[in-house]
Length: 349
Ligand code: 25A
Ligand code: L14
Image: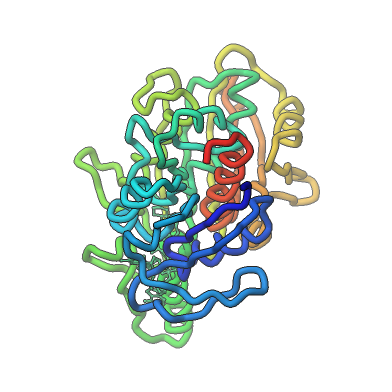
């Protein structure tokens, strides 16, 4: 039978709600759908297609008979439940960072490295949202001209930190305008103090700090990029470095990507051609008409938008581009469902 029994873990979250929509729109034939969350959401009713589905509390037994799990309930929840689901015969696509760096866990962008799915052992990891949109735009350039170095600065939306983070940004914005003291309970790291307001502000910290002064978000961008493009998280073949900044935008990450090609110096028109032919990519680059990607336009769309392509005139072979995508769609739910579609297509589930 080709129809799959599918469970969504974290179905009530900002990513979970989009997993439901993306699954509805996918070519995966769903036999049974199970929506799982924590105890506090158990009993609420959500829609899948036109069907009412009651959310259940996640327990190991809920994965009995499930073929495919799509997970986005945070790293600790994935660590607890996904091995249980695999034991019961399911294949899991995980949107958290819990398993991304394990040797036997493929880290996949379907347009870039679908073949690595063949090596899966039950868990496939969805990369970090910032990594996905950058690597999607860089991959066609790497394939044709090679890459020596990537230097990225991110402008990341509040929604990466969940629905509660969106709520706080909106409340803080109103408080700022009213001249009131702003709430600060979520940013930069929900589970860790101190907290700072994001509205009318910039926070150069996403996730916790590492010993070397980089944040974990920056560390993830560096090592996930190497794992996806070079199949080795510590490869020296492409140098990658990152600065990740939280900005007061609701949905859609922006990235200023500076990169050096390896063996040729393409013209900007060559790079524009490559981007406009790339799967999942849309070129929005017309400086004369002030056309360039913006989060407000990318929110709700499946594509990743690229613009501001230009040469570093003083360093031949070096270029700038500006990349924007909906962090909850291609950065999370859409890529997860696209991985699941590939798994079905390749008969790996
Ligand atoms: O916010 P949480 O706690 O991380 O929860 C996220 C999802 O996981 C479920 C949870 O169910 C929700 O579906 N979950 C949490 N603990 C679980 C457990 N032990 C668990 N499932 C099983 N077992 P829930 O019932 O706890 O959440 C109910 C709804 O409440 C929202 N919410 C939470 N705090 C809120 C709030 N809403 C308003 N104000 C608050 N203070 C919560 O939505 C849910 O709808 P959410 O959007 O905050 O959850 C988003 C989480 O998704 C992860 N995430 C976001 N973007 C990405 C991402 N992960 C990877 N990549 C991304 N790009 C984050 O973990 C984010 O916190
Ligand atoms: O590693 O807070 O997938 O914006 C994605 C969202 C980490 C945190 C990941 C955020 C997360 C991030």
